[in-house]
Image 1 (spheres, rainbow, N blue to C red):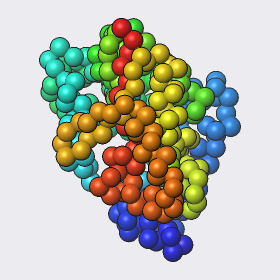
Image 2: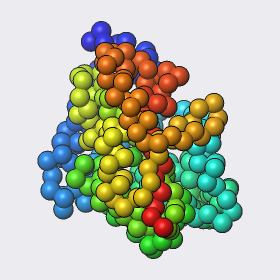
Image 3: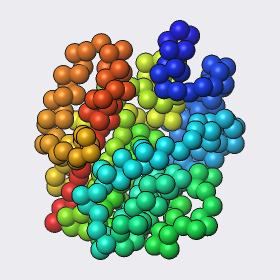
Length: 284
């Protein structure tokens, strides 16, 4: 419990440990349905379990946390090099669509893909060039070759590893030749990053798999992307490196004790050690 109390102070979750434990037990129960379900089960479950989580955990941070507008602006900075008035943009797992709404002011059209209707707020007053699409969590119901830029931010970790590659292939199919896919997901070497971080060393909540840079880069190549780069936002600038450099930094971090790795992930080096940030380019 001492570790849990320290973590609550670190991440700013002001709920009691009793409420955090209640959240964890519900999330683990629901996540186990996804972990043990068949592919056919999961196609129905992705939306259902998130709707149920939000109903059963009314003090879930997504309901009570004040939206961090600065965080959304950071994501916009990450996408800025690829934005233009001619661009059609896709966000996979758009949540409350805060990022999609910001991007809509800079591009021709936006598709916001989500599995749970309960996470999407009222669309009154939203930009006319933004369409919300509810999907099964794997398929991308958009015409092939119609997307210039796609984003997956904190999504892949919530997808069953057997489904993640299929979803990524579907994103690749939706992109035009040479289109860009920006992927950010918690780094498995510094996890767990879901609510189970308070109770153990392995992700057992809705993070069904926390990826490493090596694993995700290999999966993107298998899914049909021709180039994969490590892309970090440092001091407002998107810096791109070859994927092996990102993999090397990740391997080096494994030499550091787990507690120290978590500290690095939450500090100034979080872009490198806390997240897997990759830019994938579709084959021309």
